[in-house]
Amino acid sequence: MIDPQDKPAWCKAGADAEQRMAGPLLPRGGALMMNPAKAADPYTHDLFIMLPSDLKTIRTRFETAHRYGIDPRSAITINVKDVERYTQKSPTIVIVFDVQFEDYRRLCLAPLREIRRAIKLGKAKLHEYQNRRDDDRGNAKASWVLDAEWFPEA
Image: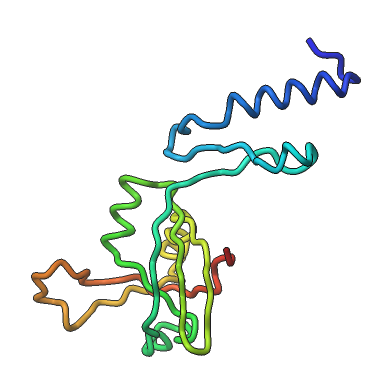
């Protein structure tokens, strides 16, 4: 048992715990990594969290997003089949939306749980692609329409 007033002992115990936690995969697929800046600044944050992530590159504005009550300037989409697959295989995934329009740029982080919450609450709207009804090339038949402004910037 460490004396509650023995700060050096608690600092050492914390450093030992950080070393044990860093490296191995966590049960849901993420991992922790030591913060290399700790070598120079022992008071900086201890770890970085590494989570599964997927990049969605958005270069085409969804001009009709206003039909769903979402500003076309910041509208983003994610395929329904992607949300379903992530839910089954990578429930802790964070989707990185890289939105680059001439007049709007945003790199945002959207945890799957927040995307699913937007769907459940009815904020995200379902868009079915008319031109893909008979698609046989693997294109998604439907996507969820979201707003990049709902998610924090990276």
